[in-house]
Image (cartoon, rainbow, N blue to C red):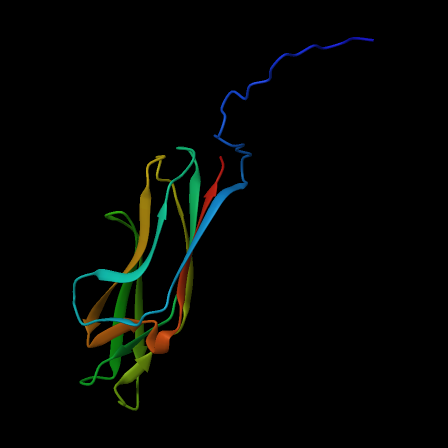
Length: 158
């Protein structure tokens, strides 16, 4: 029979956590429910954003987001909106949403969009992920009638 005597055990990376490849290390969520409209043909923030600080520089970041939006164009039967996912000032992903109103009522509802994106920011500094929008013609808006949009950001260990 052997005996092991220890006076003190010290964790080598105290506070760093355990990083098992493929597992979620941390999750942050955000919701936004204030109607935000735009007629601008340049991108502007929708109001949906998450500030996230990765624990490891080699992690993958999985971003899930859902948008409900609509377009209004009183001069034509088409409404078109552009949406993009940003990491700070870097565009990661862009969506072009078009809808037609063959009855020319002027109000056109885009469908709800559920999207995902995997980012590799290679940093442990704070990051802001956000959704921006811009119009092609007419007015576009998110959260019409105070519906919610959301974003979920997950750090995945490598």
